[in-house]
Length: 68
Image 1 (cartoon, helix red, strand yellow):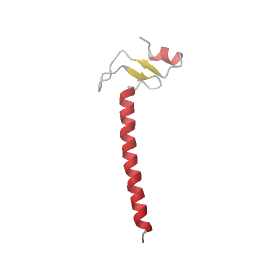
Image 2 (cartoon, helix red, strand yellow):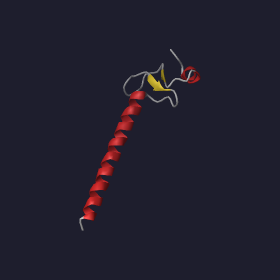
Image 3 (tube, helix red, strand yellow):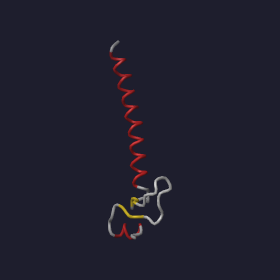
């Protein structure tokens, strides 16, 4: 099993951790920060959904103001 330090030395984006993620049990982690890949993707998707809703609400507010 490759350690995070070894993965960094080899220029790898990911490495397999010895410790599974507490949330979903996966071993694959990002070399740069040690974050679980699955959790990072879920967090990113959640944030994108929030921003999508904010942008939609902002567009709806702008279009209401243009109708005056």
